[in-house]
Length: 383
Image (tube, rainbow, N blue to C red):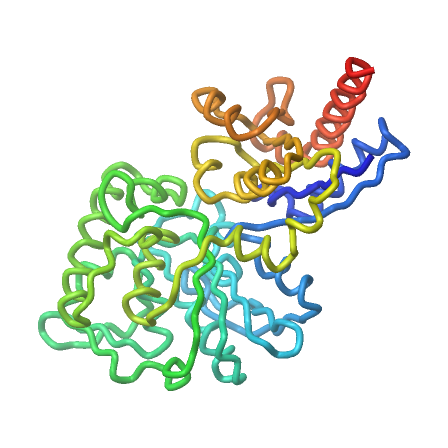
């Protein structure tokens, strides 16, 4: 019996490797003779760089950048094995986890540090760059990111905005100058590893969908959506492009739009990129079961998230797939049941969020054990 354990991270709780390890420990307690293969995944958010660097036997390079609230911090970019390119996680420099919950305000956060990481990779001579844009703390339309790479934004009076761009500063922009973008971008190949397909604006856009997750109130969501619209009116007129309706433009608070419009990047589902790098299809062949999961199983799980990608790959090979979630959205259970053979929640009793996050390793072990017992039951029924 061979079981592949291929989860994503449990956001703000455990990285994917720790999730896979805890599930495996639970399965092993019930099925000590099973062959278990842990395969931590990512979908364009946290853990993407670690997955790709590990798959290519690469390494990380640390540098100092501007954090989401303008503070200086250490962040790293990955160098793929053989110097074939770089992989950058927006979460490393501009991530939500870097901002204490009480201080989260997407009007005041910036993606500038992510641009500094890209600049560092270009300065190191790395011109094939994968940018994983999940997990950001920002709704600045990616303006901070491209500003760090040399884009200049001017107010109506002609003055330059010198401070790192934030969601609140978008409304000040009346002019865009891209003549001083980093020279390395001319020969660079930039790939966006993205886990969502949201457009930039409106009910499914960057501010409305992701703003509340980053601390925005209802009034701030409306303010940010209007600021993004005004900013991209200027950008699209200046650059002669239209990106606001492109799938993924709304990802990472609009950073997807900036990477498309300013840098000519190509967008690729992050989970597909990671699964290809790890050769997931080959590793699933002949498996008895695959276990995947993420912190919350809901409708978004079905749209570009790692568990959904694993389910598609497993179904193509006729391998049963179980998804474990820290929580399961009751309104999405029917849709989830159509994608996975079974779903299982870690939390089985009333807990506060802090308690659930603290108890995550033990809860995952218990969930892994429950899945293993299902497998034992299926074998008995078959026999």
